[in-house]
Amino acid sequence: MKKKNQEILISVVSILTIIVAVVGVTFSYFTTRMTGTAGTTALTTAKVGNITFDGGNDLTNASDIEPGDTFDKTFSISVPATDVSNTVYIRMDYTNEFQDLQWSIKGTGANTDVITGAIPKTSTKTTVTLVTNKITKNSVAQTFNYTLTITLPNLDKNQDYDQGKRFSGTLYADLGDGVDMIYYNNTYPNGTTTKPQ
Image (cartoon, rainbow, N blue to C red):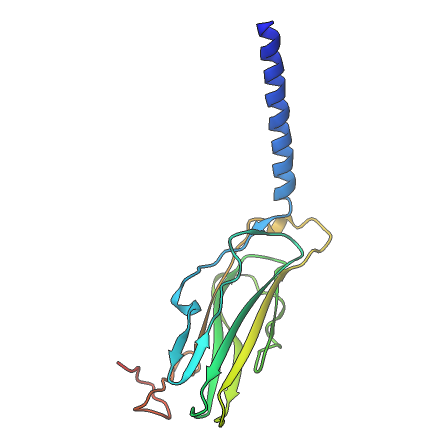
């Protein structure tokens, strides 16, 4: 009797192990993980002169994504009525290991010619300009809203090559060309290349 109970227990444990393995393999067939660094300074509100850039919330990166999933990242530029004309650039430093990941962007001055279709694969940090917005002086405050959409399309084929891949990005805004930065403050209302102390 004791031997028979032991055989039944071994059979039940074996069956449960096989079920868990099959479910795990099936699930990992089409899942991957999107990661990023939440809480970095570049994703909080940053202010240069009177122009305020708000990077908004980070993309959801705590869960697995599957083909067909879409994520939106919203961000904005706010300019008070008293500001001078400026060209504001919003850039993203990113790495992308996915083959099928795609992006698009909406908003005034959005670089829709570049930010469309497949995201270029890169294992090293690459900088891309998402927005170039020439903001003219206005008698009322202005706010410009943007949405960056990232999608892992379902191609109705085996997409195991994108399993376990990573995408990460950091947004920031500047008033220069990214090399020769231009800073604005009360002492230099027309800008200076010397960083304020």
